[in-house]
Image 1 (tube, rainbow, N blue to C red):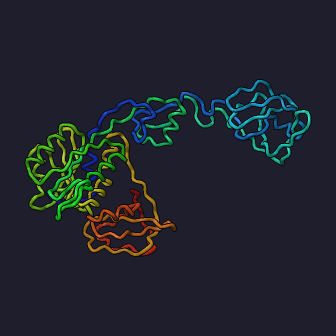
Image 2: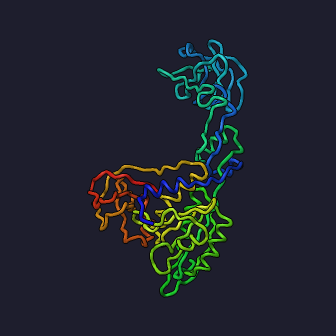
Image 3: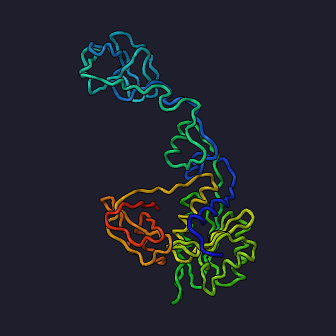
Length: 393
């Protein structure tokens, strides 16, 4: 099986969707979930003509006259009296406009007179009235299927009384780390070992996109142990991520174990840097990603392939946020035969700088990065001041 382009790999992954179905949840528990059904409003917004400033509600034709104050209308209370020529009502922001008024002039443009009277002291006044149904009409669709629910959408759901929402079920994503050299973060590694950072990085990435991560531990470089862990994952998870054991070393036998367990490998090498040995396969309704063991590679491949897949199975069409900016310094890469993704930071002038980066094992480089820039195959250099597209991470 030969190396394929990233575009082809992405097409294969997104063409292998195994959707998780839907469920209903309280809107208070829906943050980062994906709407599966449209949400409509059960009322007009605003529900009545309302004042947008603190001031006095009157007839515009009376702005040049002394006006007798009839009442004070607070937010949350209904007007009791109608506005007639020569009268007004003191009104607070958000309160309903009394019948007969067509303008609210601000307190700052008023002079209080004796005998509960007031006079407009400005030269001009806007209406300062928000009209009934101006923002939303009862029955309007306010949120579409496929919307990722953020804090802003929570506010909309609360406003329209959508206290229960239908969302895509969160996929259960199993995470397995492979390698004799690995130790858990709370353990002291052997002289030739390293701590397992990939699993915890991936668990955090899964949570960030709304999936449910299940860490299944470290498997040693043993076929039987690896196969047993994979069988367990296949019995409980929708998606399985295996990090390490997918390159070309003597102990990198994950792809062959996957095949032995009935996984159909759809690709096992991608023309990309970092992340060339990324592997992808399917088994019934389960998809399996074999991610490289180097932490930068596993992070980047999650961002490029796994994240859009997780979003898609929940019903969201993910498009990575990008920003065009100038490159602060020139950058040259040593090899240009593959599509490259390079971590960058953004300075206070809005320019992108390539972070100090020693290769795909240099995990601390990502902690200083806010985005990735893409370099096409054959492209070796980015010039200082060149306009580049930064993919935010």
